[in-house]
Image 1 (tube, rainbow, N blue to C red):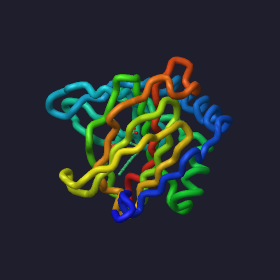
Image 2: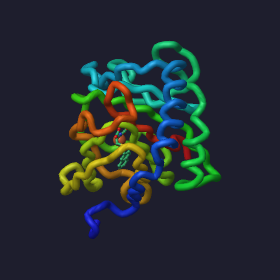
Image 3: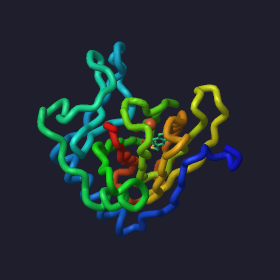
Length: 204
Ligand code: MD3
Ligand code: FE
């Protein structure tokens, strides 16, 4: 982590320009219309997370008090299959990840100004070789990333609308989180807030 960023992390600022962001947002609105945002709850305690979520793709990440963190093919509220991953996101994956192995899950996180996400690792997948590809839309956030141990030093930086982060190699299991949202820093979402999309491979 000599540069201050974990090995394997690629940061692509403003990979998507404004009009591509608007196209992506429309596609995500269609996903949310079919698969409504839900409140994820922590395993065992049932404590609600501050972020709301939905998914698209063959698998979606869900969590609740009884079942804990997992991937499943259906929406926990409607029981229906998740909608397809928008073509613009499949194209992104082909550009920055392995085009031979399609993403299986796209988690959609919606942050209101007060929402945050504590430092964690993403390890509910069985495919740590494939990267996680993240797209930010809307208000800026303060993103924090460290090493593969919780106590490793961390680095913070702002993610803006249109930014893409590719978490491959050693960075795939880095601890990371979102410490805060900067309300009013983007005009993309009429009512403010931030959307983060993460494309993932779940099965090897
Ligand atoms: C670094 N989401 O959904 S995306 C998550 O902005 C998640 O909503 C955050 O962490 C968000 O799990 C961060 C960037 C990201 C995603 C996965 C990573 C960074 C990562 C996996 C390993 C290291
Ligand atoms: Fe994560």
